Length: 342
Image (cartoon, rainbow, N blue to C red):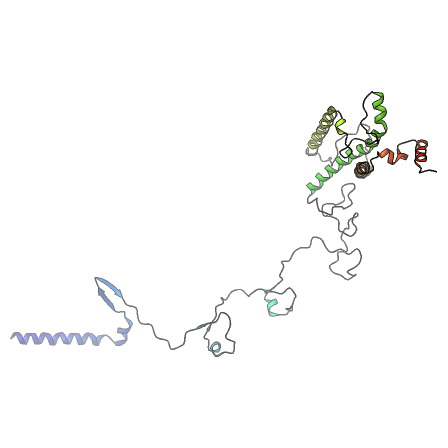
């Protein structure tokens, strides 16, 4: 066969195969498959074309400028920027939302301040709130010392002399209360000794000093040595050493006894009763403890008054109140000579 004829037949056969291949693939199949392209020995898959939408893009309106009746909002073009979550909390301190409101039923209403448990109810000793005031606590325990205030929480009345007086709230715990009572009873006992020793020293100091050929410690105005009056430098240093040593020993003993865990211990109970004056009955014991703390408190006020009085008047206590410390005849004679008695 002639070469030209062979070439013509080959071209015709190739064209027939190509047409047959395109007939086997439908147009939908061509669109469904991705087009593969070879470039530099790498196969790249081209993404299918996305359909083009004729609808306008959504509109963001975070400030709510489009009203509910606007065309854009009716057509659903406004895109919400708020995430759908729990209902928004509404604070209503004035209770403007009724109990039947949807917000209150959905537990959206809350107060501005958290709910707290009232520790001290309102008390009304003067009847200012009226008899139907719900806030008034008729069962509140009032302080004996301050009738217009409630009794402090730590002051339960178990300690003798507890009248509910703690206006500054020093006793915040039972431990604080016991420590303050220990300090109070120590100062009370020391004040009782000082309240007796101060005027007695002014009465007998000169007589004892003259009898022992010593220099009296009180001054010419019969004033005892003190921080305000002066004269402490005339006291023998060995006296201060003895006093400091005795006080330290008593303090050390009392501290150890208070921490011993003895259930019968109470503030000030050092077990010192050489004359056996402490009663055995519980009621009598309470009465004696009450008498001690009351006299001690009075003595603390008295010793403070002694110091201020002598500093201001420049005269001894025994000269200011001679009726308590001198014989009646001597007192009347002194008042007569001074012009008080005619």
